[in-house]
Image 1 (cartoon, rainbow, N blue to C red):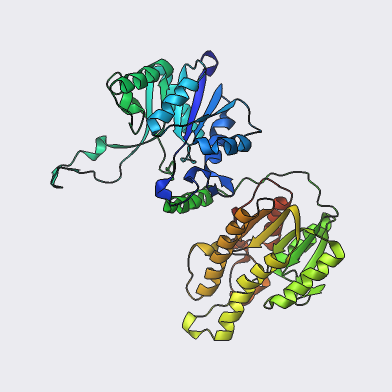
Image 2: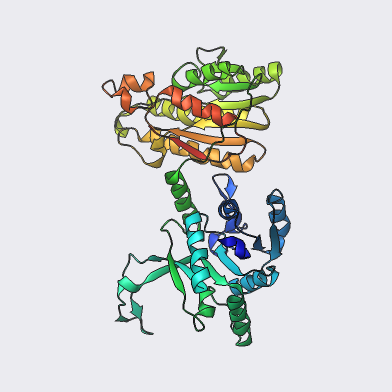
Length: 444
C-alpha cells in the first residue's frame, strides 16, 4: 500500500545527553555491543518501506555517524539544532518531497516494526498520529502552591512515546507557523499541529522506553536480555586449523567444547590442572607461563574460552577464608588473569562463561552469584576496550555437569541443559563475527 506514497523516517539523535553524566551522548553508548541509535536504525531499515532515512545528529558526530552507516543505503546524515524542535525542522527541510514523515527518538531502541506500521497506516487515514501507552499511575494536577486541585480520570490519560507520524505538508506548515510565533522549544511535534487537526493515537509498548539516564541503560539491557539473546548467525564459516585455548577443558562444558572444536578440525589447547597445559588457575604466574608457552609455539591464537567454575553451597558465615578465596579465584580471578595473559589475533574471540545467577544473589551461594555478575560486567567492559575482538558472555541456566550432580544429586536431568547444548551455542558464536559485548543466555 505504500508504493503510492513517498515516506521518510526522521531519526533524531542530536541530544547532548546532559542527564546521562557522560562526555559521550547517550545515543552513542553501547547496548549489547552496538550503539543505541543503531539498534533503532536497524528496526526502521529492515522494514524496507522508507524512501529515505534521515539521521539528525550533533555536528561533532556527523563524521562518526557517517562511518557507522557506511554500509547502509538511502540514508542522509545532517546537523541537528540546539533544541529538538529545530532538529525536527531541519530534518523536514532535508526531506526530499515526502508525502509522510515518521519522527522517532533514536534513543528509543525497542520500537517495534508493528508500531511503525500502525503509525503509517493511521497517518494515511488521519494525517497526524502519536504513539501512546495507558497510564498505570494516577496522575494529579497541582496549583502554584503545590496543592492538588484536580485528579483526571486515568481512563483517558496516555503517556506519549514516539514515533509520531504526519502528512508532510501539515507538519512542515505547523513548524513554520510556530517559528513565526516565536515558539522554538516545543518538546514534541504533536504540540505544533494540535490546533490544526485531530491527532490519532496508536498503541505503543511498555518496553519502548527512552534512554535518558544511566539507570535507563541498565533497564534497557534487562529488556534486551528478557526479549531474547542476540541473534546468532548460523554460518558455514570454517574453524578448521584455527587455534582456541579452552580454560577448564577437563570437565563439564569445557570438555564438550573441546569435542566440538575437534569435530570442526580446529586446534584445541586444553588448559586445566590435569590437561595438556597443566595450569593452576588460582595463580597468575602459572597462567602467564602457560600463555607464554602457547605464544612461543603458536603465536597469536584465534580465541579464548573460559569455562572453569566452582560451585559450593554453604551459608556465607560458614564459609572458611580458604573456601571464599578459592571461589573468587576459580570463578573470577583466574578468568581475568587468562584474559590478561592470552594473546589473541585481531577479530578473534573471547567467550567467558557466567551463569543466569548473575541477575540475583542466590541463598547459600552468594559468592558464586557475585562472581558471575562480575564476569558479565568485566566482559562487557573488555568488549568496549577492545573493538577489534569479539568478546561475549555466555550465561547458561542450570546445566547437567558432574559438579552440579555432586551438589544436587536428586535433580531431574530432563529439566537441565546438557553441556552439549551449551557447547553447540558457543561453537555457533565462534563462527559469527557480528556479535560482541553481549550477554547470551541459554535456557532449557
